[in-house]
Amino acid sequence: MFTQSFHQQHYAAGEEIVRYQDHTNSVFVILKGIIRVHYYSLSGDEVILCDLPAGEMFGELTAIDGLSRSATAIAKTDSLLASIPDKVFWELIHTYPPFCKAILKRLTGQVRRLTERIFDFSTLAVRNRIHTELWRLAKERMVSQNTAIISPAPTHAELACFVSTHREAVSRELASLAKINLIEQRGRDLHILDVAKLAKLVQEVRGFLAQI
Image (cartoon, rainbow, N blue to C red; front, side, top):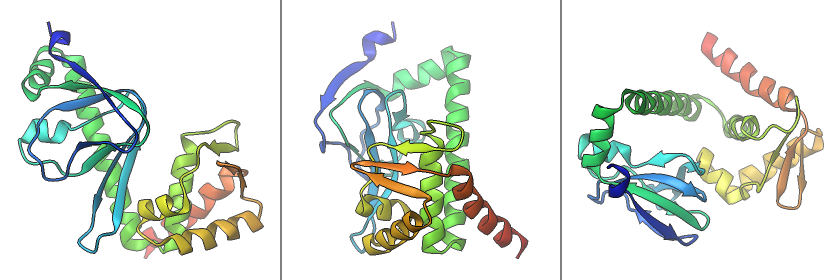
């Protein structure tokens, strides 16, 4: 019954799906591709919130509270999405406890990630924020116990948008990490050669700040 209410649609890379502050209310499930969620500051700088892969969803906040969209979502790659009307989304929550539990866990995870990000932005220097973002990406792309391959790696400009800085700062810090053999750029791939060392750089700074 519910699947008949789902509508599938293809989006080309770069195509906008929802816009910040618009009043659409569907929830989207990513069947194929990668979706970028971002917004622009008053100064015009892009702030990237996250890149969502296939299997993720977005748009549930507006479906829940009825307010306008909190960010813009675009297709980073050619993508296939299933849209769920807000009324159907609510029926699923009320009808299927496992679905409801999954949504609650997802929202809780978002709050925890945003809380951590606010802490990082408020307390960490730019170089430490770059280390933190690289570590986050590395943990999702481990290829051995202590190495990871970020493929394709974000551009220096994209990484700057993730950590709220400028491209030049990212380029300088990546060059510094390459000099100590912690990372290596190979074509479009960024190899993290010592994930444990990268994690230590992040955790030492966080631990020090927590004691202040």
